[in-house]
Length: 193
Image (cartoon, rainbow, N blue to C red; front, side, top):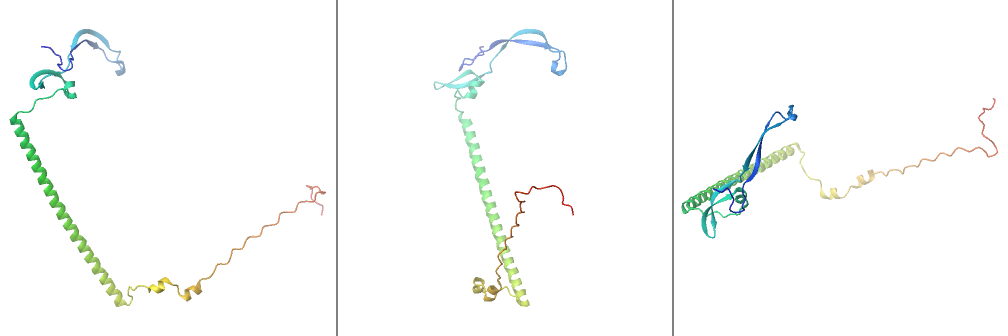
């Protein structure tokens, strides 16, 4: 029996198996020592599977790398397997449709509840506003608006009360100290008094 991939031709390679003893130095030991070397063989991961070759199904050995890369075409499923997969797919589609219907119903009820809550809130606010207006009317303080004409034009009394600000006075600069005459020399001595 040849352990060889019939797609890429991969075969086993020769190697060695080294037996070591001791504890590694990084773990605090004195180091690893070789105890023995034995020849061995590294075999590829070859699987015996059915593939389609020139329209016919054959059983061949293929390595796992070729399987993962999709270099082989697997045969179609048997009719019984196809029927089972179709039944599973139909059941999955029906379950998704039922879940979508339930979601739509839940959204509709939530929207109706939200609309009812908004209407109730608006009615409550209107009732509070009416009660407040009634209380203010009893006190004689109505919530009346200012007259639009008075809001646009200030009255003559208001114009008379506006006072213009006086202009700010500038601070006069101090005169610079007078320098001594050129013919006199400054002295540090104090005059006798």
